[in-house]
Figure (cartoon, rainbow over the protein chains, first blue to last red):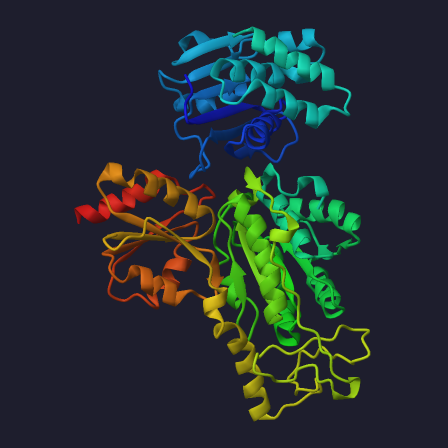
Length: 178
Length: 383
């Protein structure tokens, strides 16, 4: 089912790529899918290790407000992030959990998909690619943007970098999990 | 700006869009002292200006920054700096100098929660009066405020055009939300961008007067280094730029500095309206980040059975009193959401005396939500 507007929250700790993931979704939607996107981020002054979150909204039309007030999908990459986003979850929310880090996710409301993202990322070649696996999965599940747009954006962003192939592979691995 | 970006749909941060707009407008000199939440504008300038033959200087502080851009402006460059409220506090003395010597310059203030160092990473709209009255003495000033990343680009170009056209400092008043937000933007092709440059003197050098009066009220410019000798004098000066304390001369000078802006309000005051109809009952007046929750309220208004319109002020100074009067003529109530204790609201009350004006005010460093506005509207209706 295609919705007109997707509200996404990507939460974790600094260093897990919550802001980069949001920027990739937004860029893919804007530059390749001819959609509108808006993103706002919350993060601390620390470089790594504390709560970080990005709200990304993607729509066929201009988006009035910049925060995800009724998120359709929430990604939780770390245990430390869960307390901050738990009150945003209702029965209809898709919640994607990194089961290597978040415990007791059975109690979480909503449609929970628990994936061992950290483990999968290490297998792909880098723990840092866990956000890319999650992106592949979330985009595959919801079709909020097209597969081509996601791949092209990541190619564009990383083509001259060492981790380029790992990132592409990570997206494919995530996509396979749907 | 890299050629590849022109005419494309991009997903850019507001601060970066300001930087791209500045370069598209022809800016080639930036001097600044990076401060959160404006730092990306300095990063962008450092990275991009040298590629287009421009200059970036990291200064020792904000006092040095404003001084450097005034100098570069008087040498003929299109100049800008970016800071936040604490930096504007330091710049205020020389903002007055820029007004007095009529140095075109664009000053970007990405507002954060104050007073003092306040909250570096949190948004506010508490500098509304600071940018108007921060520097001493009677003067007028221009300030534009974007509410989308697209407007960050578009209004920055306008800011440079106004600075050049009226030979004055022009503020781009941002806030942490709009500056740090990423959003879809369509970068126009250069042929679709309207650019204005300051009018240059063409007279014989011996006939040149740097502050000559003309009907336009804006003196013709000769850059430092030109065969026409320009003078930048912060003290009372005559048309030739030499000191002149004659009361009639000084009265005329101060009035001209005000009039060149205030008498061009029709051209300078930019705004947008959303859902403003003849039968609109509630008018929301907002600028910057507070426009966005208001837009969400407008979208949901029918659900609440309310006739709500929104007047978005893109120009804050000179104050668009006539536009506000025009759109509030028939409404029953005005709502002013802002991340301050009511600065815009206070200014509106100078012009609107017979309609209740309610504020939606937050100063904790959090965004106003659509729900915050709805609450105030509903509370008013129950009275």
